[in-house]
Image (cartoon, rainbow, N blue to C red; front, side, top):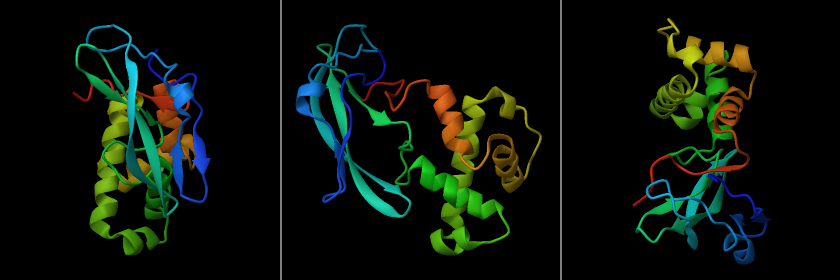
Length: 175
């Protein structure tokens, strides 16, 4: 098991916090990628994420193994090491490759360029079809992805590769 199967996320609209019921989380028993034994629920750690320019707090469940390793689970739409969700990154990059330059003005050209490079590297890592792309221009590459997969190109590629909805665990343990 490499994903949360029992617990369902609960959204508190007053606080903007996405969390889980403790009773559900203690029933989860993911397998430790290091030693192969069952892990147990340890605690949740807050993780900020921006979805459509609104900041939410996701309480990321953490699991611990008797071998000392820990794992943190995140929904597929929270980009690793990014404050923006996959959906927000799609919106920013779709705006960037279209004729309007609102994304560069709103987020800064450096941030947009950084997101573009990050998204291209992620797609090339996940989808072998695009690894061999001869396109050198980053915007042309994003445009090709959008033309091939539609406006939700990044989330559709991630969903097809992650293979579990809505949560995944990283390939490498935290500790």
